[in-house]
Picture (spheres, rainbow, N blue to C red):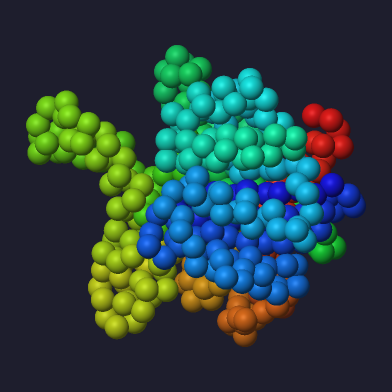
Amino acid sequence: MHILVINSGSSSIKFSMYSGDGAEPQSLFEGEASGIGSEKARLKFEDAAGRDLSGRTSEAKARSQLEAIALVVQTLKRAEMPPVRAVGYRVVHPGPKLKRHVRITDEVMRELKAAAEFAPLHDPAAIEIIEEMMRRYPVAAHYACFDTVFHETMPEEASSYALPVHDRESGVRRYGFHGLSCESVVRQMRMMGIRLPQRMVIAHLGSGCSVTAVLAGRSIDTTMGLTPTGGVVSGTRPGDLDPGVVLFLARKMEREQGTGNKEQNCPLNELERLLNYESGTAGLAGLANDMRLIREAAAKGDERAQLAIKVFTRGVRKAIGSFSWLMGGLDALVFTGGIGEHDAKTRAEILDGLEEQGVQLKPGLNASENLRKDERLRAIHASESRTRVFIVPSREDLTIAAHVARMSQEGT
């Protein structure tokens, strides 16, 4: 059985093909349509050996998500490509009723559409892609895999907000995100024969950032809450804020924009854009959402960029320290995500001052870059460190493929 995995973002669609017939799905092809909505959209497509198969389609037109998914389908319908038997999608938020990965039925689709109000920046685009793919692949089985499921093991005291019961019953709680990434870390460590640490913290650091406490392989707490906007500082999102800040900003925008009756002047829309696209390290630095650019500016003496880095690393360090205290110690710390996997300086700065927690890096191991794919899961702690420190690549696609293969075999 050949499984297609679709992982869509605001300006990109990652896709990969797996063979799901063995004990573990095997990667066959990987690709990405990027720059969606821009003048220079691009398509990257390669086989499991890393050979570029993009050919003449490396530059393409993709003014919308639907045009991009049409480009993906066109690529996958080449004569040499295997037929798609199942499709798995990463969906950020399932809403309050869907608590596990599921095959998509009419009823599930209704729940996904109802859940869009919980993630208006993520779910509507994912639903649009699902509906288009179901139209293009009517015979294949389609499955939704959620970023929240890994965190369903959190105790009620970790997932509850201190709000009235009627609000909590409407689904307002802490869901947590990056769950597929966290699960992929646990899976890979087990696959590599690494004895799973009892008390582990996973720091997923990329454009979006979160920190998760994992006890015996199960999530018991995480920094993100109802939406991915909260938690530690991300690239364009502020992380946790005093609710009074949000109220203050809403009143300020209302005063500046008048009654807000017109859609384009609605303070809620402005506030949503501010909190999700104009804040975070990019907002602090006044630069694009790219830690490499922020570090370059900081190295040249840019004080705003220097502050952005300090706020970011301090917040992640606080989260790691608090979860270590919560679990009564820390046996292992894992870095994953784009920044977590590739930014040695950020890793070192986050861990600076955590020696009391038993964390000691080996600088030579931490600084190693340009590794092969099979080397990217590696230990970077010093021999005397009481806490092991690992870099583990985020393999959400592999995790989705594994769930799709399991559900297909179970007939669920």
